[in-house]
Image (cartoon, rainbow, N blue to C red; front, side):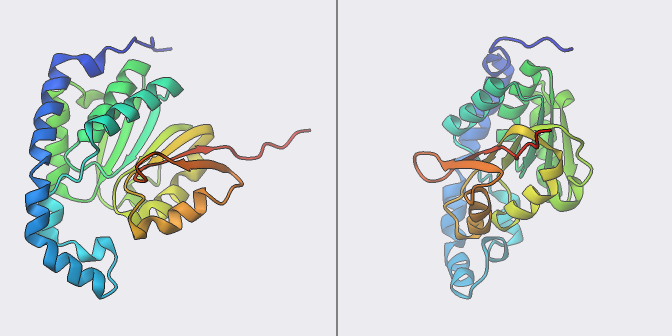
Length: 229
């Protein structure tokens, strides 16, 4: 069994430098977003989902990242639950992936992450390499419902941060691999496209779920009924 380390990797200078640089670059999202806002709003008025309204250029250029505090929360959740098998939907440039990979390394585990945009997959792999974390991450390019089809049980933690209208299909794809007590974190649940996912995890039954302060991130625990006797 791999040794569980103290909080070491997130404080590593190489990791900190890469994260600082990426968070600075991600601030450009505001400028990119303002430039395409009219087209985006037109698409939404016409009834398009977030995924349909965004243009390919927006997808390639924008980071759409977790905040530093959100990233530290992911790290803390993964460490606190002892998560060793972590799955992420929506790699982008790898900011959240680095936080998750730091926790996975400290826990003696690995991360599987998936991203449909090829250029972002390459950039994320490079960022993970510069942070010294590439060896604990499997970056998969393509549609998440396909790239995550063969994820083996048990999965300890899931982070959903890709297209919001795919949150529920991705959860359904991963459900057979989740262990009892695994944690599922979904970002940007304030988007309307995330509503089917929220309805599912908030319905009771096999999930205990709550939105965190700020209304953007949903934290859910997988608690399936266990038959006795």
